Image (cartoon, rainbow, N blue to C red; front, side):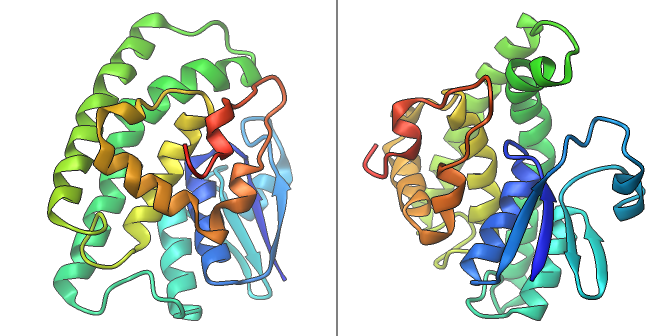
Length: 221
């Protein structure tokens, strides 16, 4: 059985959890407060970051690399398209959410509202929160534009790009920072994603000191 070292509100951890669950790969979870000094964490990943996946062959780090490793090792059901052009689009969107969306939105909102408290680094910086709330509107509009042309974010089939985006949005939804009324198209897309069996354990996550809104685990929100 695999073991995933994670934190419940880490979007990068959630992405790997979704891929493992979608592919029906058995794994257990070990929560890690990765911001605290821990020699074992550096042994698993010298970068000191999560997620880290332990297999019989060793430790694997970096969520994008882990997900493609799992795709190669467990190809069914596929989360990467066959064509080169479509695979490019999946990777482009993975980068969009894990880099641009994370810097402009996730880090500004989740970082200020949650991680400052759990890490004991002070009170939220209101300018960052305002910036994140402004930026998420633009990102939701971009997603709506894509989904108006496609069934899923990267094309006609569900892919790793959808799980990457959903991992970030699910963390933000836990703290009520997604305006689902902004786009019916994006809301319908997220409803399809969160209704998948792979999402069940994520919707059951509880972070001490933070209570999710009632709609968080509601499949008909």
